[in-house]
Structures are given as structure tokens and as C-alpha cells.
Image 1 (tube, helix red, strand yellow):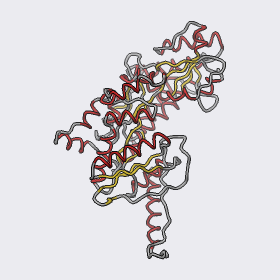
Image 2 (cartoon, rainbow, N blue to C red):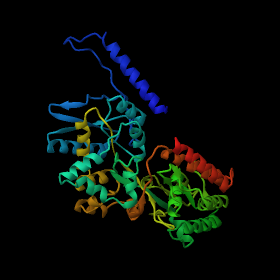
Image 3 (cartoon, rainbow, N blue to C red):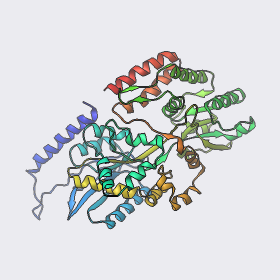
Image 4 (cartoon, rainbow, N blue to C red):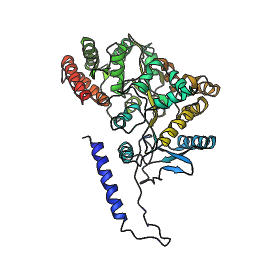
Length: 459
């Protein structure tokens, strides 16, 4: 039994004890039980959200004739305000559902939400990544909205189907890549990695931002030979190795057999190539501090791949820096996009489940989704939103970092979300590090990686 499921059981026991103790509670003057207990649904959507302690969990169910749909989140500032604004607009637009937007603490969000949903007191919607939905699906705690999409279509409403159809083809795996083929999650907006480089050094050596991995290695060799520092560091090494595998035709997961597709001679060559560049000093394997941007600011490295939001953390006091789209193609185009969005969680009332779907259909309408992308300083992956006039005006004024993400959006891809798939990310980084640090040969690292990945997928 997983730790999360053990915690869910303990959560249920605590609830039962609370109910038993409630029988002996003193009553207030008005005759109602004096019960000030609160739940503690903590949440991880935004890393800078403060932990404000316990948050009250209003009762779900219905208010009057309206089914209550709860969204738990940790957004702050403009993002939180926008969610509230759109919930109010949706509530005013119809009379069947009422959406309540409940801000939660950051710490321990995923476990707390899982426990609450498992015990029938959790939200109907959270915003996270597709991989987060897998545990809920396995436990029967997620809602397959394909049922509602089919019902809509039978009645001539193709809005949700049109939104999904307008996603980049490779990105649709994020939506429809769950083990049973159901749809439990949808992207809300998109960010991703870009390339940050020391323009002062690049200009001095007559270099251009790399568009292929070969150009990257060549640039890094020139940087190292002239300045004695690595030319490249990955802020998210696993994202880059995933991209290398996909772009070189190695594949990822065979969903039917629950085994990895990579692991052959081509994978060994990729591991060896990376290890050789680390050994030569052209690539740095890991940051000396917490973040690649720190090493970049102090000129310990001349370039790094990292989230587009890193433009906020680069000081570059003694040099000029620049940004460029990250490498998206070798043999095959592929870009690792990051698509946070709504996950549909099961309630005790099917009317509430349907209400969550109806709200997200409203939330993904072009003008509303355009606003969500804007308050998140992100890109919308939906072609339906990209055709919106307000969104097009937004794109004309986005920062250069997002322009770099937009340049790769057509190549954006994702991976199947099946049990064990999330563990592959850690294993890829672990075994690539073994090869790059000389602890294993490239062949040994790949053999070990394949065995460990297949074990994780087998459960």
C-alpha cells in the first residue's frame, strides 16, 4: 500500500474518532454543537504561497437547488483573483451550479487533497499536472469527462471536443494518454524550458544560439577552450534527456506492454555523448548551488536550459545575456511543454461532477482561457484560444521568454500518464548521472535504467 493510501486510511480513522467524540460535545447557547474543528487541505500549485495554517472546508452538496463545486488552489494575487472572477461569472450565467474557489496552504497539498477526496470531503477540481491524476484514477477517485463530452456532442454541443481537438497533436497524449483512455485532466496554460546564454561570450567568439544538439556541443567546446567554463547546464536534466530520447526516435513507453521503448543502441549513444561532454568540461552536470541561474549569474557556466520564468532571476551584472528557443528537433521534433491545468475529482454527487465539467468548459472558452494565460504569464496551447483577438493582442506584447516558448509550441509533446510513469523521471536522471559521473559505463547505465523503469511500470 502506498504512503498516500496509508495516510488516507489514517485520515478516515481520525474522522471516525472525531464523529464519536462529537457525541459528547457541549452545546453552545443556541443549542448547536460547539465544534470549531477545521480540515487542513494544503496545496502545491505556486511555490511562493505562504503556509497560513489550517483552512476551513465548507460542506459540499447543494445550496438551494444548486450543486456546489469546490476548487481548491494555492494561487495568489492576480491568479487567485481571476479564478474568483470567473467563478462568479459562471455562477451568474446559469442556475444549476455554484462554484466555490477556496484558497489553501501550500505545504502538503497533494497528500491532503488525496486524503480529503478519498473520504468524500475534498474538492471537485484542482490545478496541477496530468501525472498527478494517476493516483486518483487508480483509486477510482477521478472523473472521466469523456462521458460528458459524448453527451454534449449528442445534443449538438461540440465546444469541449473542439478545444481538445485544437491542441497540438503531440500534446494530446497529456490529455488522452491515461491507461484506460479516459480524459481526467486538461491543460490550462503552458510554459516550458528555453535557452539562456552569455551573449557577451557568444558575441566575442562569433557564436549563435544553438538550434541542434551538435551546435550546442560545438559552442560549449569553444566556450570551454576560451574561458575554461562549461557552456551548458540543465536546470531540469530529466526534461533534456526526455527530449533527447524523443527527438532521436528512441520512444518512451509502450502502454500496452507497460515497458519502456528506449534502451537500445541509440539510447547508449545518447548517454555516451552526454557523458563525453561532461568529461571534457563542456557540459556541467549539476548546479553548484540550488539553481542553474545562480551559476549563470556568477559566470560559472555560459548557458543553461531552464524554465522561461528564469528571466526574473538573472542579474547578469558583468555581462549581457540573451534568450532563445530551446532545442526542439534532432531527427524528430519534440518539445517538453509544461501544462498545468484542471484535474476532475469524484464527489459523492454526480451533479457536482457534471458541474465541475461545465465550469471548465466555460473556463476554457477562448476569451476566458486567454485571460488565464495572461495572468499566469504563460501561453495557451489551444488553437481555439489562439484565434481569439484579445489573445493575439496579448501575444504581441509577451516578454521574450514566452516568445521562445511560443516558437516551440507546435512541437510540444507529452508522455503517457500510466501507473509508474512518474517514477521514470527520477530514474532517467539517476542513471544518466551514473554514466556522466563515471560510476557506470553508458551501457551499464542504460541496462540498469531499463530494468528499473520496467519494474516501476509493472507495479
